[in-house]
Image (cartoon, rainbow, N blue to C red):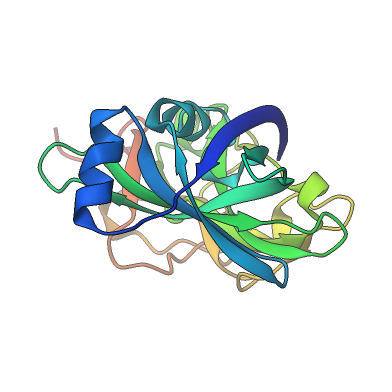
Amino acid sequence: MRSKITVAASVRDSRGKNEARRLRRANQIPAVVYGAYREAVPVAVSPKDIRAILKSSSGQNTIFDVAISNGETTPVMLVDMQRDPIKGNLLHVDLKRIDLTKRIRVPIPVTFHGDPRGVKTQGGLFEVVERQVEIECLPDDIPEKFDIDVTPLLIGQAVRASDLPLTGSMKLLSPPDVVMFHVVAQRGAQATGGAEAETAEPEVIKKGKKEEGEKK
């Protein structure tokens, strides 16, 4: 998703561990801007600015501008980062230039809202099987997420990747039959309608009333 954020970056003249330590003492971290068939530029950026982008609603899929001290201002995305294994602090980030006229591949979170009818009225289990899909689209069409209403789901019914609402230039790259969410019967009862999970251990989110005749 395109953002109006602009991150300032200063060109680095030297590299190595000593330079990285010096930058961190100055509340900066090393980074590199590359891609779009142009020369890679080693820069220094504020980790505070990068954390703000990661905490935004679009997270790592955010497209923002980086203004480099050499005069270049270009849209970029965060494509890789290194963190301190103990403290979790950012140590280095890679910023890839984005050509807004060309399609790119991105992972998109898939969330849900609502209470499935199969849980409320049939005593089924609602399970989350997958939490994201991969799509290809123009940079300006990248969605923050796909949020699905699971209220209509009955036992044996599922939401698959092919059911997601693709718009604009979006093209699904994940297998279309991948199950995102489904409702299954309790106690291992055989579900119908293609709701079999495609993972061995899906996450159970909601549990409805017990089936009639089930021992308490």
